[in-house]
Figure 1: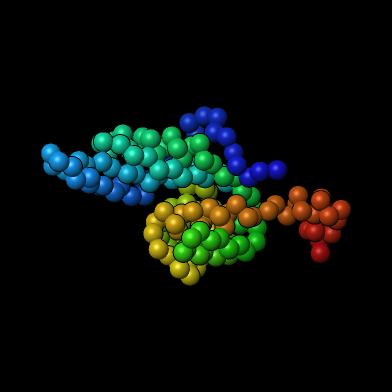
Figure 2: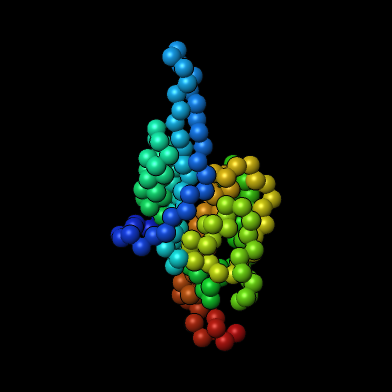
Length: 168
C-alpha cells in the first residue's frame, strides 16, 4: 500500500515557500525566468510540494500549485501529533520528527514548519542535523513523514488484539 494520495477537490491550502529568479545570458541580453516552490495540504494528514517554472511569477506559482496537488503524501495523525519518532533524509539534508504532548505546538524551524502546519499536525518537535537548501529540507521532511505508520494497522498486521495495544 502506497502512502501517496490523489487529490479530488479544491480542499487544499497552498503556501509559497520561495521564488527564485533565474537569468540566462544570451546574445541579445538577459532572459529572466522564475522558479517557485509551493507546499499544499488539507490539514488532515495530506501534504505535497511542487516546483513550477515560468516567464512570470504568477505562472510559476500556479504551475507549482498544480504540481504540488499531483505529488501528495498521506500520513497518520493521532491526537494532533505523529504516532512515533521518524527520520528523513534527502541528499545533504537530515531531519528528525518527534511526537509531542498536547499544548506543545509546532517546534519546527524552517520550511518543515510550513509542511507540518499545512498537513494539520498541531503538536510536533523536530531537529535538523544538516540543511542545505529549502528544496532539500522539504524533501527530507516529506521523506520522514512518508515513513510514519498507523499503530492500529501495525497491530492488526501482527495479529495483536487492539485491547492489548490500548490497555497495556
